[in-house]
Length: 451
Image (cartoon, rainbow, N blue to C red; front, top):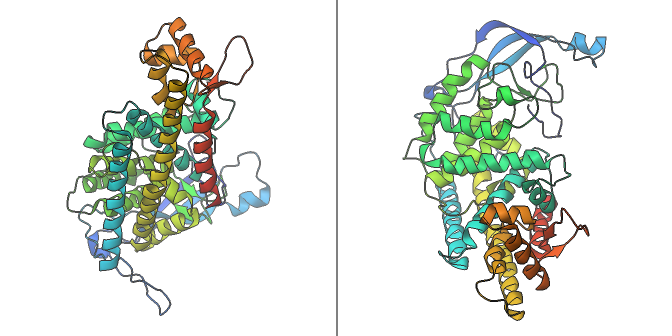
């Protein structure tokens, strides 16, 4: 499913439902690198563009199927000729980066590397909080990526979803995106088509009605626009389904190149992926997970997941406009957006790590204040509250292989020290939360919404 920048979405044809198309097979060009041309530059254009091959188009005729809600007038206007995208090949793409843009991209990449080092240094390489910190950064990135698709959920509901108690309709989808990001990092060293399919499978396999599409290239047309029954008038119409496998094979080969600056490669690969739109739904979230796989696989960040999607989220209009510019033949805006998003991720990520680490340190001080013995179970749980600030006894039993009695004792120790608070007031199915950590995460998300 594609979503336009006003939040309107539609169900693509055949996934399930939609219309039919009849090809008239007038393809403008079989594009390759020779088709790269410089977009028209005017006196007010500003910085020089970075020419890349613009997409081509081919003409088809769409026969709309009524979804049961369209009027006769709407149906009459919904059938007709449309142009679908023909993605260019990029396997051998060489971009002539202006000096200042190349420096900007390298500076942003260095900022991500410094952020990764800061997280390790702030906590210590052997700190039991380092793994949980990496986990919450990944969850933050997943939530920001989902929010770009208008899937918003608070930190508490997302943590509740991890223990099976969320009441948010979006929490399950954001949790699925967490699993997608996890798969992206797990497969980063072997980033090929199968890895991308695996990421998509993690995202979509639990979504009702979409299991048959999970981890499979689409077999129908998709488009970006407010209409669910016709691509006519859409802002972007994806390639015909039969073009997807070859385009994805070309992209996977491009990902194996080692002669492209990492952030430039991530920006171009992401834009190309979104242009291909290889899946019936979940392309945006899968495409941003792909960015994290590139960052990890190329060694730019080896410990943490920098919240790059958070940087994109603060200017979604600029992000979508940059994708449009890439399709029109100028890679400069998407490279600039990724450089800016990476700098934001590094800068805001440092603050987030520091604020969360402060909460853990305050918790340790509280346990010391009540003279909790070093071997007590509460100490073992404390650093993991960064990743899971809402817990119950069952979670502790499963996560730490504790007995139920030990889990209850740990919760009591943390509660007596004021680290956790029980919020249900029930005698059974009780849930504890760390208000400080939730507050830090919600404040970070609120700052993103303010832009």
